[in-house]
Amino acid sequence: MPAAEIRATPQGTAPAPLSVLDLVTVSQGHTATDALHTSVQLSRLAETRGFHRYWVAEHHSMPGVASSSPAVILAHIAAHTTRIRLGSGGVMLPNHAPLVIAEQFGTLEALAPGRIDLGLGRAPGTDGATAAALRRTDHPGEGADDFPEQLAELTRFLDDDFPDGHPYRRIHAVPGPVQSTSPGGVQSPHRPPIWLLGSSGFSARLAATLGLPFAFAHHFSARNTIPALDLYRESFQPSAVLDRPYALIGVSALATDDEKEARRQVKAAALSMIRLRTGRPGLIPSPEEAEAHEFTPLEREFADSWNANVIHGTPDEVRTGLDDLHKRTGADELMITSNAPGMDVRLRSYELIADAYDLPTT
Image (tube, rainbow, N blue to C red; front, side, top):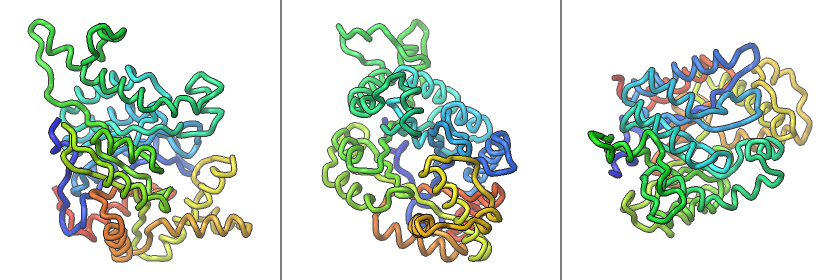
């Protein structure tokens, strides 16, 4: 697999390649259909403004997040784009049989050859009860413990190279390499590159050991970012995939035409997170609802702490914040998520960030 399918080149004046993480958020007064339509608009915007890749994250049982089926969403996005890389940020592997993921992403690769990334995580992407329903067990944590073995199995299915004598030797993920060995068969030279995602040191170390690219969730685990990146870089073992480390970080960033509006938008996003963390998930509240909400001292403390990790303000302020973050972390790529309740506000944010870095218009 060529490293060129992983590494990216900065565009414009950006300090690193810029990409997009979409949670397909659903705000009050809107439907999942509205949110998915916005995702199509966002993917087209990202493609025409020089963002390198567009990823969708897997979440479950959250009314305000409509990204429970990344492969389905990515297939839809693939039909509306032509160049931008598309991927999962990520698929939560313990929620699924490895063969199913190999089939889904083999299908995506057939739909958009050379454009698909397979980002994998081991968290459930939801609460414990939902995880138990997904994993059909009363002990959902056991799936996360088996993550390295699941990853190895998935990789074997993607490469169609189970050894002789293995019980899965005659099982093939289709679409996949087996089609090239059939009479008259021709197979795409591309295979979705695997990325490991994490918010702690576990996946950092595993990605380093296997020589895989690593994506860290800075947007909700900022205190662990530099330790995890240091661990990844120090432990990295060159592989057939990469000869040196490659790490991107997820970043919450929101640019608006004036600073006051940015504060209104991120306040609403923080209120949504408060409700999620206290077991009351719902649609993303409007800025007006957030302004009318009487925050308790604990809620205020949480909101201030959460928003301290959201780079927000005018385009110049966001550019400065992203530049500073890049200097502190040395990340090879910045993947931006803008989780404002207003769909137009989210689209405008990416446009403003692209303008701030003189990204090309194609």
